[in-house]
Image (tube, rainbow, N blue to C red; front, side, top):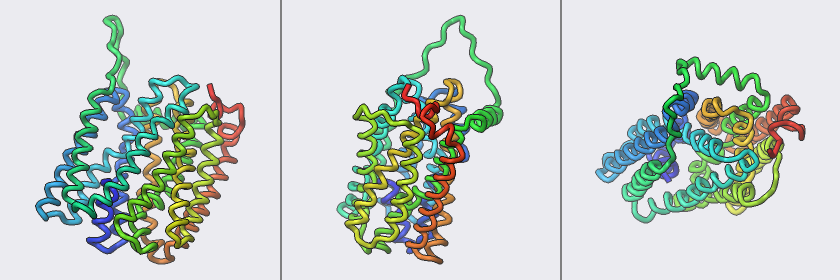
Length: 385
């Protein structure tokens, strides 16, 4: 809801696709700090981090609600608040994945990750429809009050997350390394494990070249490519989220034993094919179908990717490894910032050819480079145990 409401506001208030992509990039600028969130998770626990982030989100949303209802909102307010939220948001996904990895047996990991993703997928569908439709019906201020209420509810739910196991009386706490030394140790760990390094490369690639097309640029596609309004923008976003939900349900609600490494590579390749096709169509019906397909293969890429990284990481390194995985989201703001000038100079269709073609070629290169760790059936990344 928040991203679509504010994205449409920025585009309408400034009339600039460059301003829109800058706004979208700000939400992900905090990826540079994600490894340190992994270190913090090892030290103070995931529960404390979840409470902190959701409390800050609620406070920022409340500020925006007050500014909107008082008719004092200006684009620079949105940019500042998006930048503050962007320092924290990229680490959320990693924290949720770590919770799953800590509690689920390896043979159930893929199904559990699929079920876990259905919660965010259904939220994206509801948010896409209620966010843009709500603004059209009741205005931006009341709609953003709903966003604030949802953040408050999320904070209250985070109070129910289990805390760390109590330490026995004779158990001594482990030695605490310096945060930078902990991050360097995690980098060395990932660099020497080809399956982790290959999965991290795919994560950066799709954030750089695939996600910008289906996340930050959808308001531009709706307004300037399809010539539709704010309510119809919700249908575009909901189509992508519905496809993602279908993919998550396939992984979580069936006994299909996918080989995670191979599924990640196939999903990435199909996703970039969707980028190529989506940029060439001007039919909203075909566009909705391609968005559904893109969301579906996105789940078949990202969920196995998380499975590869969780399964290949030791217990003591898992939080830090997932913190590094969130660092790959840095590709999203880079991809968005590069998209603005490319669209302005070459046009939207040519931009999608560049992003889709480059992404497909690089996926094939990654699969070949780390084929022993990601493609061979005997690899740990393809194990179902």
